[in-house]
Amino acid sequence: MKQRIWWIVVSLLAISVGIFAYVYRAELWGENSMHGEHHLDAYLVSGKYEKFDESKLSLAREKTVVLFFSASWCPSCTLFNAEMKEFAETLPDSVLILAVDYDERFEMRKKYKVAYQHTFVVVDENGGELKRWSGGGVDRLKAELNLK
Image 1 (cartoon, rainbow, N blue to C red):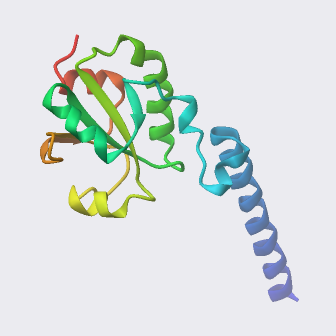
Image 2: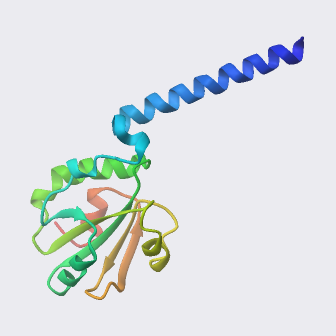
């Protein structure tokens, strides 16, 4: 009898945790987050904060190009995206942030030895790493790039 009650309690607890996780994710990233979509498009600003495209690396000849490895399930990445939406318009034209999907771009994670999301990598026009850091928001970005 005790064992049966124990299994019922554990099952109810597991169901409660599952419901909480589902609701929490939906609240943070929207209904489509369960399908890997994190509405990054809502935060992008053309010429300032864009999705990664290999052809954009050549812009590093004339700009500072920063790769931002982010994931849809990363709360700090979501916060950074929201901050970037506000900051992007004031970002100098000499800087371009490229959002790299941490979950889909395994080859890039391997190339840059990125072990976890919310990592920034400054690259040259050939994709060579010049600088890196992990974590932080817009203030850290400005500090690392010596922006005012």
